[in-house]
Image 1 (cartoon, rainbow, N blue to C red):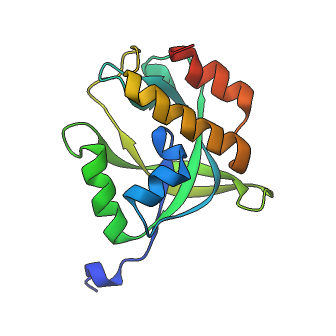
Image 2 (cartoon, rainbow, N blue to C red):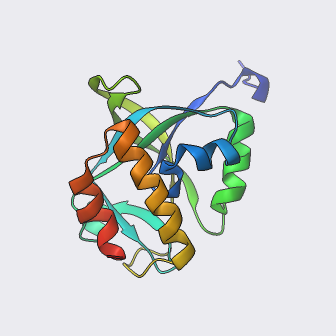
Length: 166
């Protein structure tokens, strides 16, 4: 059987950087829907040499622990194409499908369900560095949205993410 683009349905996208901001995602990808908090086990969150968020396998470097929290979105094909452009595929990030956990749904219920999700990963720039000033502002908006509305733990945000600029 041949699968055409018309046969494709929404995929799960794991956002771990400034796309934690649902307002930013609505502007970038108007047909996407946030569904809850997710986690990538065995990965580390960092700001890389480009000055933007990245995730690396926990053994690859970084000091943010062995799990990354982010927001899961249902992403339809037309928004996936838009997001690829925003994320700089293929020169800045590569698209990877990873095993993740759907930790908490939009109603705040704890799930801990296994899922497969699209993750944008920069495999070339994996060393910790300082964030760009404009990115800090966008990250702060995303973190506050995720903490206030999606159950992201503030201690995680402070210890793993904000340590790069505080």
